[in-house]
Length: 393
Image 1 (cartoon, rainbow, N blue to C red):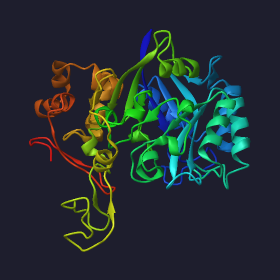
Image 2 (cartoon, rainbow, N blue to C red):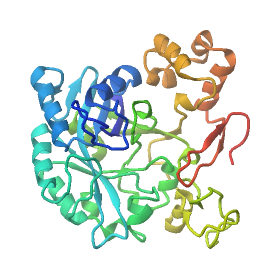
Image 3 (cartoon, one colour):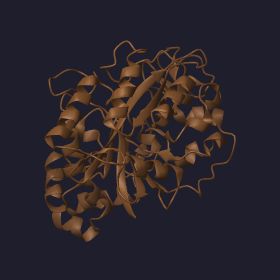
Image 4 (cartoon, one colour):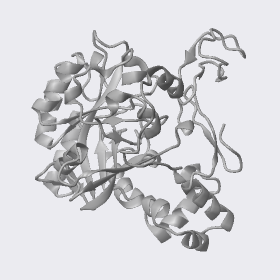
């Protein structure tokens, strides 16, 4: 068995012809560039592209296999160098059972199955070429169809205030919209970690995944999951989610929740935090609309103490770009020595870092590894900030 770093929520910005897929995604987010970045720069063993239902994306992938750029694995997924690509699709549900839009991820084992799934989606969707589109069926129908094609069903960024299961979709329980037996895992999202999500008893049965939801190349692997498998493939990933045959999730790596864009409730207009959750107007500007934070939403939903001792460790980790002194030139210098960001974050010793960097910058990286940095909490769509010399607020 080996351990692989995996980020299975990455968007496609544009196809090879320049056609938009994720409109808010960077133009540089093409299949080819994603695989090069994930494999050679980030050091990821497995990634998921979650716009693979787009016909032009499918066409590119099929051509890549025919040309020998990628190899389709017998047990699911495509290989490119040392990285395996899983074929996924992010979809939006807002049916008669939900209270608001919910984003989910569906993964298919093969290009053939994804092609069939794409054809089915096109019957119930206005534009199958675009990312994260509304699907006009109910959640349970989608779940059954995903399973019919041999796929995996994973609710995405489940606590985000907008377009998520607990953020907008349900009052208190996932059973309001989904069949709990047909969920393979849940994705936590940037403003949540294992200790927070473990306060909901109905999530006890599901593995937690941490992914980047990358809209640009640089954001790939800002959060990721460590998985024990024999090799990287769709079937091995499925076994890991089920905890079978020695396969399992062994670690989650992500931003400290305070750095997420929606950790605390804030005024939608000026960003000031209310004194209490029942405050009707912003004390600073008088605005009457607040974006509820993940922290506050979890206080409403929690029905048990946070007991995550049985789960893999969640490592609060700063992406290198968040660390003071690590700009583009410094990052390239580090990669020239350590090759990938995973090696810099996980393998390089303190002495090795100090041989390449100024002592102060190397110390910042070590402090970040140990969680010894102050954080100013984010909210209302604005990321939190790192304060290297002070305590968290």
